[in-house]
Length: 234
Ligand code: URA
Image 1 (cartoon, rainbow, N blue to C red):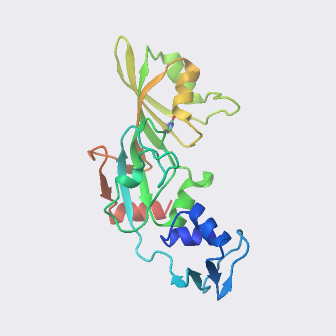
Image 2 (cartoon, rainbow, N blue to C red):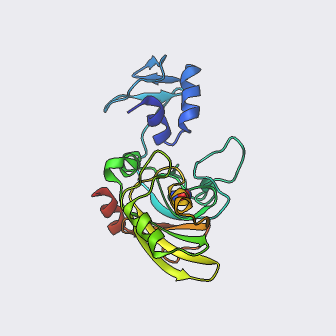
Image 3 (cartoon, rainbow, N blue to C red):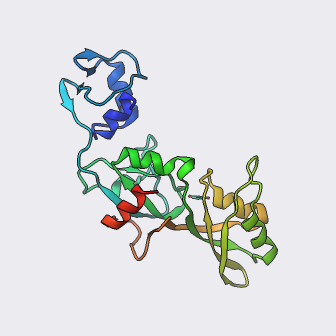
């Protein structure tokens, strides 16, 4: 594991800050000051930051948060915008979001300090279906639904087959449930835009078998043992 990730996983600081610590000569591996950024740390290596030996997080914490509109899915922001870190501020372990949600998207976000699980879950090989409920402008015809299901070109990328269900069609808008396996930037919004329906509201309700349920916006709940086991086996 890269030294900056190791330090971040141990909960000392962000990866970016870890790079600064390394650049300033504050990090040692097995008693020797680290000079390069890209150094790997292996099992049994002793890492010191500012003269203190650090250990990777031993207690793994897994939560689901319901992200509100107007928060970014990172732990600190240079522009001082609200981040999902606020939702889990009372948890002493340093958690990281698994994947991303747009600033204006609400709903299910998994957060954990289990770096290995995060890596596996965000790796394309393990992509599970992620389900969203979108409120879109206008009428969504059967032909448009068929296109979304088959796959659409969102600009240099053709989406793979999606599950699509129209939950409600009103005169001026529709509520549509869509499940996709990939996670391209703003993918759901771009998919609907391609068929001519602008997304007005977007909420993620499910990742694989993990459900948001009745969790209120801005709140979190711990994952159950069964949910953690499920994620580990993906
Ligand atoms: N697709 C989007 O368009 N936005 C998200 O936040 C997630 C998926």
